Every structure is written in structure tokens, then in C-alpha cells.
Image 1 (cartoon, one colour):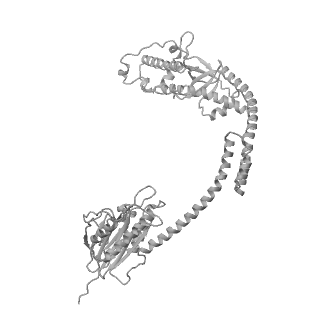
Image 2 (image 1 turned 180 degrees about the vertical axis):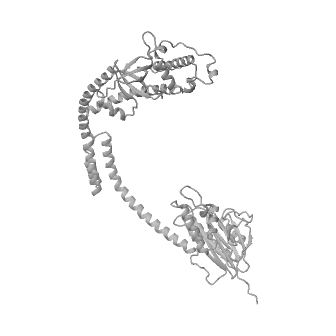
Length: 557
């Protein structure tokens, strides 16, 4: 365990030094790689190291770049080789001088321990190309040799750890001096082997750090052992023992539900910390639970009563809507079918149809504002008013105007109802209708459904303004025409992405089943809506009615 801690600490130390210098060394490599003629330059520097190390004062002709049409760094190997011999020498000197200044700048600006570039050669020696530190006489170190040995045996315990920490640089000891550092290969593409960019620090600093880690490790282990013992004793008496008592009390309460016994057991915990507060809180909670359990039981009984009453309300509401189909089996001039799916137990939508005499069929659909029981009560009131008024005769506008007047009286809740009401002459096919703020129906002519829109504007909903007069509209149905009525719960059905079913999807779905019977049409639309909304919750009542007109042909003698 100690060796692991030491190795980890030492590896972290190496990585800290490596990370400190890595980005600067990378910048140097990147700057060197900008010289496209670098392979030629390195070979030239190696071959003329002796002359260049003592002769770095140079100045290229002012028109050099103009004459050769390229910047120094952009000059390629081919262009460098094509220079006159004297100009090659000057070009190599100026490039070397510029890169040497880069080494000196990086060394000084980033406070590096050392920074040099060497060319590996057979054995353990390497030629120096660049060195941030000059010789004592001020000459460049170009051409000097330095011994290089990778002492991986001595540092072998840390090889694997250092590699796993993501240090890509090779590391080892330079035997000529007390140096220890990192170096990485720069493949310049020339003929003299591999370039090694090196950055070192003092070997003695590493040993000092290791000695510090070893001493600190022993002291830390002793201190940690004593601290752990004290902490364990403290935790046992202040946390573990009280928590065990609380656990036993909770299990006992779960079995016998005896709140006074729980309070007696937990009274021995007198700590003023979080454990004592928790024990006191649980004692109070046990007492509260007794009262809460009784209240929950009462609420459950009340909920069951309300649910029963809502079920009865749904049955009452369903009973006032026509539910036997076909409703007039003896009549073959038309086929009609309707259905309502409430969003809650009871809803505010309704539909109706009735025969007035032998030749007039009244049919309607309506949507009361709001949902639930209030909407259902208002719906039944509105339906009865329409039934009574339709029996008295008159046009659709007369019926809506009269019902509106009745609904506006004593309407303290300010509720209203949208309604579309039509009267079909079964003999002639003439359809008279009025629209009190409701959705425009879809009309099937020649087998194609489209919205019934003759430029008329729907009137206001019923129950808003007393004295409101409604308007009649007319159209004529032919044999095979059909009228599809619906409430806004159809077009406004919403999926999990809050997208609406919409009028375009409704017309498209109707035309896919346009030749079906009214019952099949309603079932098809209901199925299409269900597939669209998926698992999304239904927010509004969905009510539909479809009338298929079958005009009787006159029999001539």
C-alpha cells in the first residue's frame, strides 16, 4: 500500500512538471514544423555545424523574398536546394538564428529548467542542434555531443503509472549532468535519424521529493490510524447507537402502531444534534400519523361517495342522449349515428335528433363551456330547451334565438353553449341551418368531404347576449350526400408533443373512409384520433354526429 501511495505521488509530481512544460515544448515543435524546408535545413546544419556555431551574424539581401518569390518559412526543400551555394549558407544561418531566438524566448519567458534539441546517433550520444543556454564563450552549442541514457531500471516502478497518466514524452537521465527530464521525437524527414526535443530538471529535486513523500507517508499513516479510532468511537456513541434505537422503534411502530411506546423508547436520546432532532421528529410524526390515518380513511369514504355519484350522473347524462341506433328503423331516407366521449366522468357536449312530422328531421350538436358536473347540468338544461322549442316549429334561427333568450335568464355562472342546428326536408333534400358560434360541419358531395363554408359567419354562442337574433342558411343535399358534425375536442385533440389534430388531418381522414356508413365513419375518425394522440391525456369532450341522406326517387307511372 505504501509503495502504491509513493508511486502515485511521484507520478503526480512528474505529471505536474510535464504538464507545466508540455504546451511550451509543443509550441516550439509547431514553430519548427512551419519551415517547409526543415529536412534540408537540419541536414545542412549538421553537415556545417562547425562553421555555423561560430558564424551566426548574417543578413539576407533585402530583395531575397522578392527574388525567390517565397517567404523563409514557406520555402520548400526543392527551392532551398536550387539556391546558389553562397545563398544556401546565408539562408541556413538566418533560419537557424530565428529558431534559436525562439528557443531562447521559450526558455526565458516560460521559466523552463532547460530546453534543447538533439539528433540521436548510434550509442548513447547525440549531437546538439539547439540549446537555450549558450557556451561560456558565447558560441552556439551546435555540433557538440551529449551523452543520453534511459535509466528505466532505476525508475521502473513508476513506468506503468506515468504511462497511464497520459504523459506521451519519453523520460530518463542525461548522464553528463544531474539532469532528469522528458523528451519527445520530432520526425523531420531528413537523413540523420530522429530529432529529440528535451526539457530537463534537477535529479536531486526528484530524490528530495521522494524522501519527503516517504517521511510524510509514515507520519500520515500513524496520524490517520489514531484519527480513525477517535472518529469511530465518536460515531458509535453519537450516531450508530442512537440510529440503531431509532431503527428498532420504527420497526416496532410499523407492527403495533403504538405512538406512546415509540415516544417512551426515544426519550433516552437527549442529543441536541441532528440525531436528537430526528428522534423527536419521529416521535411527533408517530402521533400525527394516528390522526392522519383516520383522516385518510374519511377521505377515502368521501371519494368513494363522490365517485358513485359521478357514475350516477354519467348514467343520467347518457340516458338523455339518443343511444339506440338506428333510431328510426322504419325510415330509409337517411342513416344517422352519433357518439360522445367525455373528458371527465361527465361532459358538456351533447347531440340530438328528432322528427318533426313525417318530412322534417331536426339534428344538432353543441358544446357547453367548461367541463365536469357544472357543464353537464347546463348541457341538460340547454338540451331540454332545444327539444321543447323544436317541437313548436320554426326555422333553425328561430329555435336558437328562443333558446338563447331562455339560457340568458338566471345565468349567474355566465356559462354559454356553442350550437349548430339543422332541419332537413327529407323529401326535397333542402337543409336549413343556423350556427351559434360552433365549428363548421363537413359536407360530403359526390363522395368528397369538405367544410361547409358558404361565406357565412357563425353567430355568437347561446347564453351570452339576450335578445340576439340568429341567421338561417340553406343548402340542398342530393342522394348520397352526408353531413359530419363535431365539437372542438376533435380538431384540438393533442399528442405528447402538443401538436393539434387539426382540420386538415380531419378532412384527410374523412376522405379515406368517405364511402362508409355513418357509424363506420365515426369509428374510423375516433380510431385515427386515438392513433394520433397516443398516450396523451384527453383534455376535452369529443362528440361527433354523421347524417347520410338517401333521397327517394319519385316513381312515375
